Length: 239
Image (cartoon, rainbow, N blue to C red; front, side, top):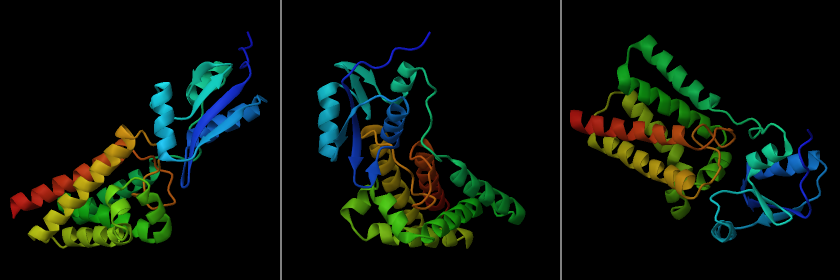
């Protein structure tokens, strides 16, 4: 049986803030166009508009679709209603970050450098990827990192701090400033990711492997920062 088409008028509400266009909103646009369904594309052009829309309609995410006054839901709900398989945003994958940590693990095994060497190698590799295209990293990082939004230069120096920390770990330095740097960067980064993903419900790419990656910001990003905090604590306790 053919699933019912959406009764008009169809309205799509989606986030379109500069630098933070929602990929699921773009998928909803593509699906409606593919199905030949006319719709009114309502863009939410600021975070304030997004929050007001969520509060007014009792939803926690965008995009949201309405048809003849009926609330259809988000992109996945729209795909289900139209009887098609929902797609993931194009090209998004955890492969880049998995590759970095797998490579760091293999190098660590080859050198026999232990947990500190593994963390140091991972940080050096991550810093290198960020430094391949600093402007792209800065743009991506500032979308969710709290300190970089308040302190303009932080995003610019972050890859160098990460590189310094990684080299210090590889050199087996046990200095308290190095441990405190790891703690501070890990805590601030973890809080920023948790706020963006779990409080603000933003669907963003993680800048951890550079600004041009399509790695989703989420649990993996939190775990990276937890590992940095754990390394900092371990260094302080050993020292």
